[in-house]
Image (cartoon, rainbow, N blue to C red):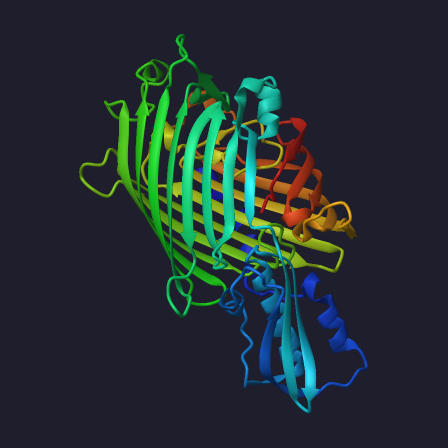
Length: 485
């Protein structure tokens, strides 16, 4: 714990100036050009009307919810342009549109109309599930010897805009290494002022091969001789959300979890559930605050993100566990120029109790906490501190009209952005149990660095290719399919 305090000051640096952000969005380049040309415009303007075009399915009020500009209000021209840029970002981050453009149309002296033009995405998406059960591709390729039995397959139906109200519906069935069923429904706004929302989720899965412990900072998997189901898990969660302002969100989650473990597992790890039963039942109550002011929530290049959550596992006396988890995540995205941006993210996770069931194990290597260069390892403990950094250079930013090859308008334009990144991550895991099998990496300062290529394309899909080294002298090539921040 002494070393934990010794190094902790290194991770506080990115919080300095966390809320000092200046925005300039790529989607607003046309508006910016209008404001810098020699074309005259009024110093002050009043918006008479706001017109929305292109929203064939999405209801108008869903878009208007993201627009801070109001009719009948007088704005300085520079203030108007700045607010247009911010409103475009908020509408785009609904993830309902491929493009968003807000154009001020001068109709008379100090009078304008506001034209909001959107291009909708394809909302009903049947997904083919074909993915690896392991933490990442490097884990599967190296530690699991490219075992194709560890593949999940199935199908999932996703509707991202039910009724045009930005409601989400997800139903999926998965087979293979992990058999699972899930259903989720989310309603972002219940009231007229569009502040309150709810969502519900039910998940059930079974596993015949499960990680039972970790040794030498690697997961240890177990399958019994009869290949019986070793773990059954069902959970149900209900979430209430409140959005009182554009960038601040509050979530309260109430849920229940039931886990049943085959007795053979306890031969491998007697402390797997930390109780004398092969069942683990508990209720969950959690609160999350999120401040989200990113220009693109899938791959941000400017803005800020702050997540603070407190989760209580075990609410009633009959619950099989009693613990509290605290998590903090703070990311800063700085646009240096049109080509360069710098990203820094600080993550903290802590349990109150000294020991947790293995089903709730946390550490570096488990999503979302990782240090590049340590993707092949798990570093488990009760307190985690991670600081990730990337300096990125955008060297390709193009788009292609593929409408003559694709009959659907929602897929007719193919954007392509490529970033060359230089990364440095460091962190620390405090294991209060001091397990000797994992002592090589726990309770020690860890860092990794390297370079990578990020590709961002249709529907903001991200592909990452990175070569990383760590301070243990290990190095490898890694492939991932989501942004690291």
